[in-house]
Length: 280
View 1: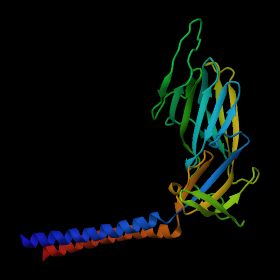
View 2 (view 1 turned 30 degrees about the vertical axis):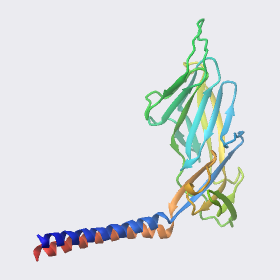
View 3 (view 1 turned 90 degrees about the vertical axis):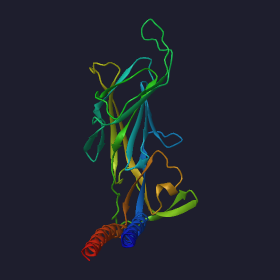
View 4 (view 1 turned 45 degrees about the vertical axis):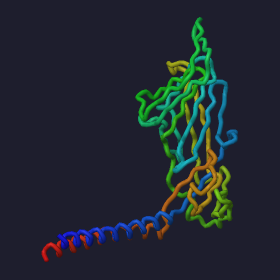
């Protein structure tokens, strides 16, 4: 019995040592991540949180791109007292001449009714509340009631660093952090020399027959990038026109590979040791 308890303690100690070693390497690798923060610009006006807004007599469209890997978040408001129909299957993001459809069957679409007192025919009806779309809608043509909106999200444009190997000398740029500020490696661009430009193309109509479709075509481009070792958790709240990408540093990649090797060798060593003890 004493021998069994002793052997069990030895096994637990070995696995604990492997666990602590691997966890330490993972923590080291996690801390070896660099980030690139990217600001977008457009000819469209911006709101207080730097959202881009396109407004006409029919629609008010608000664009947000804040988050990891440039997520596309579009709010489409119907300003009319009659329904509007948006065809997401005929709407897309065009980036570097490639088409990324806004509709792929898995977009998340939510909506909110904001108005009341809508005169449909000769009657008068009041309504309010939310309507929710789950993770999948089967109809790409979205009906927007009067004085209501839908929100489209689920598409990410890129997870790549921009102009990482440029020969242009970067400038030192300050980033506001939760504890003060930090300095990053920054680049600025105008519309013509921007490393990334894309367009948002939205098709809609005020009649469901789509005989006379209308279009909204908006352009965006990268105006600034800043590289830093500070994670988004360490920065102040990001504006709606700033996204970020991340990747491990060379040391982080080495540590990640080393973690796998240590884990494999450790398990093999413990297994071999247990086999020898059983034979003994």
